[in-house]
Length: 206
Ligand SMILES: [Fe+2]
Picture (cartoon, protein in one colour):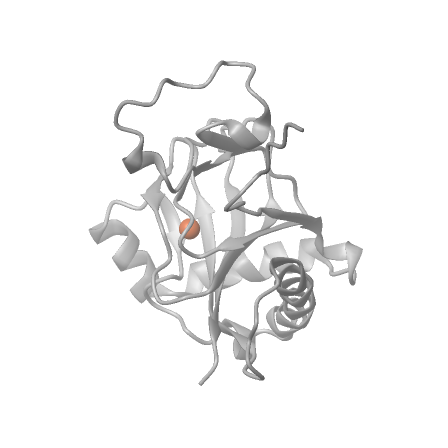
């Protein structure tokens, strides 16, 4: 009997925030812009580091306390992460996965975010606030890519789970989760409008 089994599977969690609980996306978007306008340290960091737009990544660690809607978002994300953890069969040994940080990304037209991982975390993700047409997609990379020295490439029409890259076109209100070691990038925003998202890391508590 022939058996071909998928091994070492990489899971990408794709859902809508509203699948667990609704949130006012317009209020979330207004809060992102309001914070961006006030955060001079963040604006300076973006200028110094060539970030095309605004991110609170390097300047603010207290979004959840700043505006109640971010706390509301945290409560919803906690439940999505719990679902994902269940599906991953993690043995957490009575220690929780807890929100470590959460940050705003406002990517201008022409902006992108190069390939990276999120070190020191267990689960990372993004929820999408404003995604105009032609806004940059997120692209995930097979973590075994560096091992494929003599491997033939995959066919253009290979099954999605066999492809070396997976590109996802996000939508407002959507939430994506993945294990933090999974390398990803945001492709160039060609929408002519801002692309607004909120990213976050969950770590394994002590
Ligand atoms: Fe990221």
